[in-house]
Length: 266
Image (tube, rainbow, N blue to C red; front, side, top):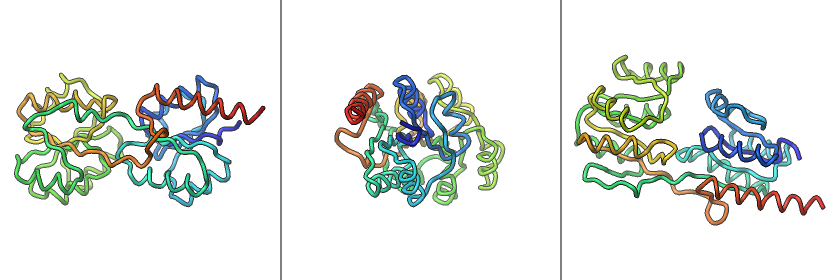
């Protein structure tokens, strides 16, 4: 086996945990991340790391050149374009595709101030009738859409402490008092203090699951009487046995894959 036989599409803490299971099983692999930040988050792993976004044609070419036999899509739950490209590339090359996606926890909380929407556009339509200071904890990728959709609001961006991200915020007109560059996840106590500090009237987040500190982020917001708008995840593209929702499920799938590979070599 070689490093190209298995491809993990990563950039998340979930992908790192999957890499660690592959390491423990002695399976060589490549983990593909989009940015140097993603490469740094991969940490000390035994597999190879390739850095840089892959368009569909590039992904198809890579899978063919590497003779890849298994792709594990552990990309961010909201990276819909990435997952669509991965699915299309695997279909074109006949490569087995599994999707790891952590549970979203949205059923664990109910409250009159908790609102679920399926898009940024619908979130903006809802927030128009709410308070002025809107805290965005949805990452930096879509800040331009929020700025365009809520021009009358004071937007507060909680983002990663990465120079290019802070510069992006500044380029979009966020002032120094509106940029909070800090690395999540946080405890419920920290979030409660943070909401008081930034004087948020509304908080916007995503259904990030336990690994993303979903309950620790949402419950203090509701306890403080602050409306919380949650953007739900896109529907998963992979269903059935190849959709994995826990590391235990991945371990079982890995064991089955290894058994099949072992029989092929006999």
